[in-house]
Amino acid sequence: MPPTGLARLPLHCGRAGLSDGVRHVDSWYLRTANSIVDYPPLRGEVQADVAVLGAGYTGLAAALHLAERGFKVVVLEAKRVGWGASGRNGGQIITGFNPSIATLGQWVGAEDAHRLWQLAEEANRLLVDTINRYGIACGLTRGYLFAGLKPRHMADLRAMAAEWQQQGHEGAQLLDQAEMRARVGAPHYVGGLYDPAGGHLHPLNYALGLANACRAVGVVIHEGSPVTAIDSGTEPSLATAEGRVQAKALIIAGNALLGDLVPGLARMIAPVGTYIAATERLGRSRIRQVLRDDVAVCDMNFVLNYYRRTPDDRLLFGARVSYSGREPPNLKQLMRRSMLGTFPQLADVRFEQVWGGLVDITVNRTPHLGRIGPTSYFAHGFSGQGVTLTGMAGRVMAEAVAGQAERFDVFARIPHSAFPGGPLRTPALMLAMLWYRLRDML
Image (tube, rainbow, N blue to C red; front, top):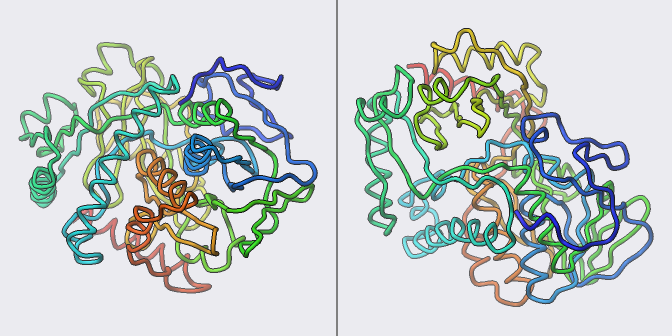
C-alpha cells in the first residue's frame, strides 16, 4: 500500500523475499508481488515509545498511525511482513460487520451500534485514503456482489440493503435472477446485492505497501524476530531470543498466529484454515463469460465460496474451511469440486496454484479489541473482514495510546466469549461446521 521507491537503508529487495530462510507461501499473489524488502532481525535491546507485535495489516496500520502522530515505533515480526493471512487472503473489501446493525444493537445498544457502523464506513474510506496517500500499488478495485442461492438468502439481502440505507449507506442495488446471471455465469444464483463501495485488492502488495509507508514515517521493522515473552505491566516490553524492545506502550497484533503468548486471548479466537485456488489463464472472452465485471463476489452460505478475476484473466476462487488445523490431503480435488459446483462450465480448466492459511474468528464474528495492561492493547478476530477493519483497529489503538480512547472503547464494549470445549474445542468446532454445511445444503 505505500510507495515502493522510498529512500531507505540498503536492504535486499527481490521477488524471492527470503529472510533467515523464511519464505512467503507460494501463491498467485507472491508471483505478482511488488519488490519484497528484507528487514533485519532484532539484535540487542532497543527503546521505543510503542512496541508492536505482528507485521500484518493490524500491526502495520497501528504502527503507521502512531508514527504519523510522532511516536517512535518498533515492530517485531516472527516471519515476514504479510506472511500470514495479510498476504494470502481473498483481498475482499466488505461493507459493515458480519452481524447486522440490529444484532449489534442488542449487544451494545442502538447508539453504540450506530457508532460501530460509522467506524466501519470510516474504515473503508481510510483504506482508500491510505492507499492513495502512500501510493500503494495494490490493484484497488471497486464493486462487490453478494450472491443468493435460495429464497432465504434473498430475504437476508433485502434486510441488509434496507438496514444499510437506514444507516446512510447509499448505492446498494438488489438484483433479480436475470440481472445476476447477466453479471455472473453461475446457473444456481437466484439473485444478489451489488455494493459499489465494496471491492478487492492484491492483499500481499497491500501489506508490503503498508510496510513501506511505515518506513517512510520512521517505523523500525524487524523480521525473523519471534516474540518469546510479553511484559504488559507498568514497564511494558517484548522479548525475543536475541533482543528486547522496552517501550511505554504495547500493541498486540498476532491474530491467528499469536498462539499462547498472552494467557486468556487464545481461547477467545479460533484459527480457521481457508483456501484459494488460481486457475490457468482463461483468456479475456472466457473470464468475462464467468464474471462480466471486475468485482469481488461471495455467496450467502455460511461456508461460503468467494472469487474474483485477475488482471491476467484467471479466476481466483476461495472455498473450504478447516477447523482441525490440518490441510485436507485432497485439497486440490475439494477445491475443484467447489468451483465446479458454482461454475460447471469450467470442467476443462486446471488450477495452477492452490494455497491456504489461517484466519481468526470470534464466537460472535466481530473484531475483538481490548487491553491486557495499563498501556497494552490488542486487536484480533476480524473474522474474514480484516482487509477493511484492521486499518480502523490500528487507528483507534493509536488514538488510545495517545490518550484518546473513546472510539477504541466503542469497539471494546462489544461482548465476547471464549470458544467452548477446552481440550475438546477442535472436535466441537468441527461438529459445528458440519451442522452449518448441512444447513447450507438444505
